[in-house]
Structure formats: structure tokens, C-alpha cells
Figure (cartoon, rainbow, N blue to C red):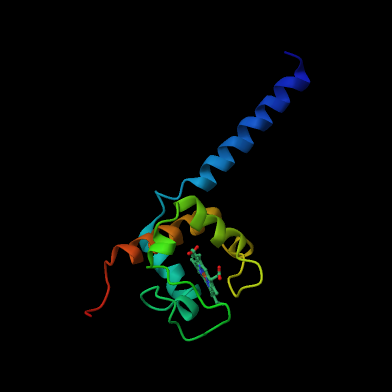
Length: 121
Ligand code: HEC
């Protein structure tokens, strides 16, 4: 292998590791995610994640507890948090949060979906 080839092989490995890191949300820190959610997401998504926060938009804020959200893969939710949704109020949090923080808040979105901490009906 030439010197140049091994350098590009190293680059490929680094890109792969970064992608694997990004796609793997399952190990996010829920406690940290809860704090981030309370500070950043609650005003739109609401205390329980039902999309009933203080601010309303068109198109409406997603209900994060609904099957439409919870049936998505962690990687899909993470990508929306990362890049936002075009032409909606959902912004790209990659400009604000670290990868670790986005994984943490994704883990907390999963917890909202599981109903833990949900108030009585
Ligand atoms: C300014 C309001 C606003 C804030 C703040 C906000 N969101 Fe959203 N979010 C939205 C809207 C509106 C949508 C629906 C977008 C659409 O129509 O696809 C959405 C969609 C989502 C989705 C996609 C749900 C699905 O079914 O695919 C996720 C996940 C999400 N938000 C997570 C978060 C997290 C985590 C935060 C905090 C870091 C956050 N949002 C902050 C408005 C907001």
C-alpha cells in the first residue's frame, strides 16, 4: 500500500466511526436529555412531548409520543433533531448541540414515548 492509500484508508475509517457514532442513539444519557429537553424543546413539544407546548405552528408541532414518531428508528429521530425539518418550525439543533447532547435528547424522546413520567389521565 502506498503512503497515500493508507492515509485515505484512515480517513475512511474515521468517517465510518463518525457515522456509526451519529446513528447510534440508544446509549444517550436520559437524565442529561431531560434537562436539554426542558430547556430547548418543551416550549414547542410540551411537558409530555405531545406537541402541546406554549408555542403553536403551522405545520403543527409533532407529538413525540405518537406512533408516528415512536415507530421511527433512533437514527431517523436523531437526523430530524440534527438537521431540522425544512419549512417547519423544527430547527437544526446541530448548530446548538453536540452529537452527545443530541443522542441524550433522543434517548429522552424515547422515554417520553414509553409513558414514564406521564401524568394521570
Ligand atoms: C420552535 C418549535 C420547536 C422546537 C423548539 C423544537 N421542535 Fe421538534 N418539531 C417542531 C415541529 C413543528 C415539528 C414537526 C415537523 C414536521 O412537520 O415534520 C417537530 C418535529 C420533531 C421531531 C420529528 C418527529 C417525527 O415524527 O419524525 C423530533 C424528533 C423533534 N421535533 C424533536 C425535537 C427536540 C429533541 C427538540 C429540542 C432539542 C425540538 N424538537 C425542538 C417544532 C419544534
